[in-house]
Image 1 (tube, rainbow, N blue to C red):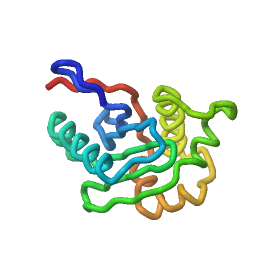
Image 2: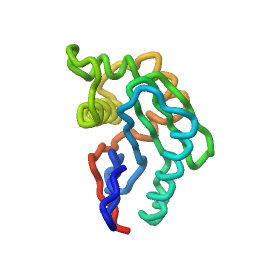
Image 3: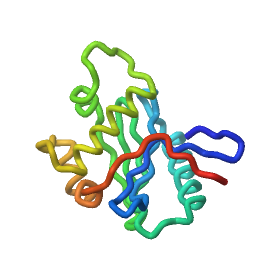
Length: 151
């Protein structure tokens, strides 16, 4: 999330077919996400949801980093943690030791698009996300990058 005076930018936004936000996604480029960073990021995503008017279909706040992902289901007040290494191994070129923010955003956006379209067999990590309800609830959504929110 980048702040420019009265504009905020969300790294990725999952929109349903009606254009409504289903998920707000923050991408962290550093491998480890501490509990403090995770908590602060979820609070920032909640703040951005408020600025969007808390759309009724908004269901997920997600943090994705090179090592770990977190999904918070805001309707059920539950969350899940999962490894992202296998996702990035699949979606990033093999010769990149430390991916930067734009590469991570591209890889995670493509992964989310594939999940929403159901075009790949689910890995063990993705099976965990399916059991959590995340994959079924993002079916048919489209990831949009760098979404600006006016404040």
